[in-house]
Length: 84
Image (cartoon, rainbow, N blue to C red; front, side, top):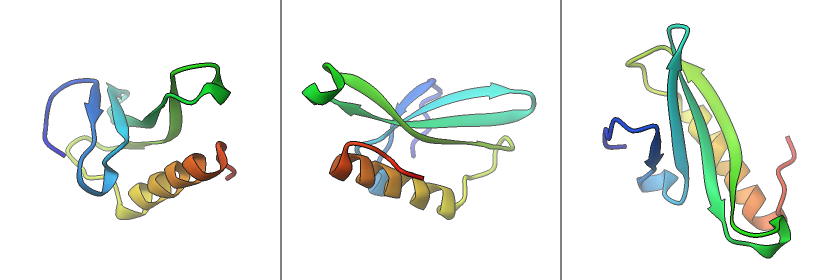
């Protein structure tokens, strides 16, 4: 993902279709992964939070974390909910 320096970043590649909210605090980088939904079953356009993680600065998130987020996003799109 290209470095944009913003708190709200569109994701690319295998994570396309998702957005990442980035914040720093307590010596960690915190990430919240979301998708935008225009479906009427949520009452109108919505930001749907799919998952999140915390990691040390300048360290990549694990492939396992990204796989989990992609799985939850696919499940939401299919079922309109996410069951853990």
